[in-house]
Image 1 (cartoon, rainbow, N blue to C red):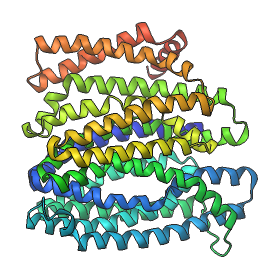
Image 2 (image 1 turned 60 degrees about the horizontal axis):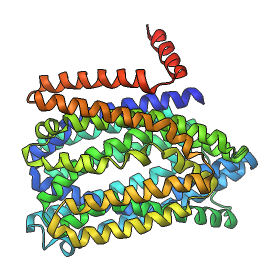
Image 3 (image 1 turned 180 degrees about the horizontal axis):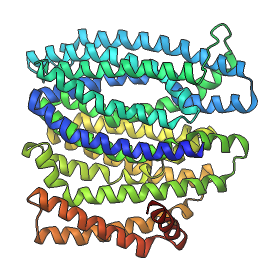
Image 4 (image 1 turned 45 degrees about the vertical axis):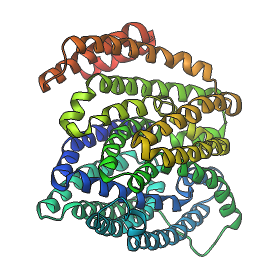
Length: 501
């Protein structure tokens, strides 16, 4: 499975490149076709309906752990019972999600009548109706997606995601040209989600021989899964607060234009999130195997540090590059009316560096069944986030959820989690930071030098943008090679470069 992990990581980062290149065209295309206000309505509706994903109650993230245990200590019949349980569970979840989504659509005026125009309220209702079906398809696809991931079929998984990145904007472009506006974009997403469901089901059942036993119900297994999933569900609530609730509150308390600016900043912020999840996701089955077989904290610390170091290099390179070149990029990509998005992105992405480079730690917690404390702390942070956003949005606009987000990430994901990893999980976080802090210091030094340079030679054209990007990348590489990489890492880098020649 090592080749699958390598292929998954390579294809995953290729996916990020393709997705972001597509978004360079896709977001401005949407803004030009539907306008800033309708784009805000679309993002608000999407955030509202996306909240229905909470109906999984964390069961999807629990599958790999229990599958690994059944594979190690059980029989094929036990796995079929587990699959049957998940199938029935998600049929129920999808029915409930679809019903609630249609209920949201029917009562959209209750939520947005005071902040949206009558036409915008009508549009939001149509969008929510379509998105309800889209979310139901996505939820049901989880049954097969979890089985595919448990089998470490990363090539298929990443190829399928690349299809999504390319197909959605193509379908949307066709429907936008037919004059369907934001409704066409929602229909394009629905079409792609239906296709993905069919692809996942076919691959899992036909290729991987996934089978379901719906006649036997293991009550003890269900209780164990429910207890384990409850705390993942709590964590999903926190993710929803950080990613969707701000748009919903801004839509209810401010205006569609304010939502659109914040939505653009969230879209770029999510790029940073995707950079880390690619690497950590491919190690989820391996982490669960280590915990199930030996529970060796030294091996887990080594894995987390090694993966975290790669993630730290990548995060720092991208984040610092955005700090240097982001103002020009946002102005050209989204428009002059979105310039505050640059400052929002810089502020919100900075504290993200810590948890994004420690994503493997989350999987270690779950594999050890010690994720309760993390979820409890995150719930407290989420509650404070909502309260601050609710009261401050009328005065601070999009800066209210940004400030709340920065505080919750810094205190919860940063300070608390590093203490918890060291004191309760048994990982050596002093060793982790000894290996990773030099990356941060070197990146900061390069950023200061380049910021001074751009103050003397500002970025005012695409030629200057790419020229400064090349200068920054070269300086970053030199500093990392000379002051950060150890001899073994240099040797590995040279051997890989020699292989490419």
